[in-house]
Amino acid sequence: MRLIFCISYLNFPKTLELCEGSKGSFKVVTSNMQIARVILDLYGPNHLLEIPSPSFLLSKRIIQNYLQLCKAKRQVRRIFSKFNNAEVYFFFVAYTFFEAWLINFLSIRNTIFYSESIDIKFRPNADSFKSKCNVWFLRVVYKFQSKPRLQNETTIYSVSEEYLSKIQARILNISVSENSLERFRSVFVTNESKILYLTGGVVERNEVQEEEYLSRTNALLSLMNKAELVIKRHPKYEKLRGLELEFNEMENYIPVNLLLKSFEIVVGYFSATLVESANMGITTISLINYYDSTSEQRKQDRINFLKRNVNNGYRIHMPQSLTEILQLTRISN
Image (tube, rainbow, N blue to C red; front, side, top):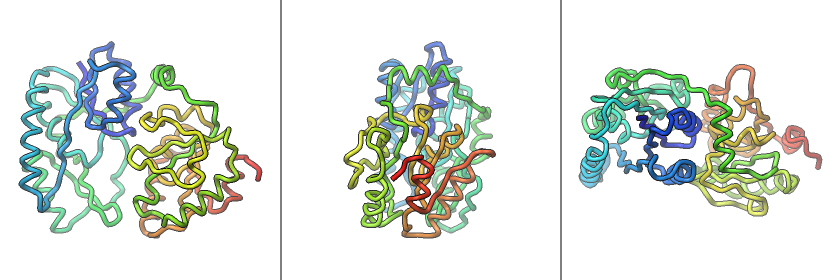
């Protein structure tokens, strides 16, 4: 039996490969309702385990949060205590403290495998008093030995070598086969658009002011052929703005990274999907230099992340003008 923890769409290609190679003996474990929907469409309810995810740090709500956590722990212990000699797979690099606790619980009687979803080791270490307190808290409450790292002004608590050693995780490199991708495409069929346009989160995360975003987005989309471009909203940030509303749209819950090879060009602002697309050799365009950013420091951090995770020989284009974008998309105005 395989237990496959899939928390984000970034993990989905590896999850699919493991499911397809398990001869039907697997369950996908997730707290993400949209991922659960995809698993139900592909494999049915017998291959899905939905769990809560009360992951929190020190705060004023510590008592309420802790009571919620204790309830969730009791709930999942009843479900997962029956698994013995199973293969447990996970991919996340940060944030998911409850899942880390559960995997630690499973490691006692099962074998753990880890395949890192993305590289964040380049981010500097955090060394504030607050981060040290949270590291202690995660160790005590979640049995999770974390590594605090800085992401702009935010501290993220990532999977550490100590944690991987404690659970005796075996490190894997999982490649996704064409057969697995074809299985997915047989269920989720896209239209014939050649350009995938990723939206959402740019305004909500205050990367760009809304007026700036609306003006430049409308200027760009007004030059695009509606028959050649399809919109894909971010799973968390669903609002469309301006001319984005006038284009065909892909179903929001579908993991688009499994359909990337259906497109010639992928366009977005900042997303791990841009990295995946570029590493497949697809023409990939980040609009990060096209818009005026609210924070040059954050913008540079985003650029560094994109460049760091693109494989040698590939690239993400970062044009500054409409003319450059149109040249890359091979569309004439």
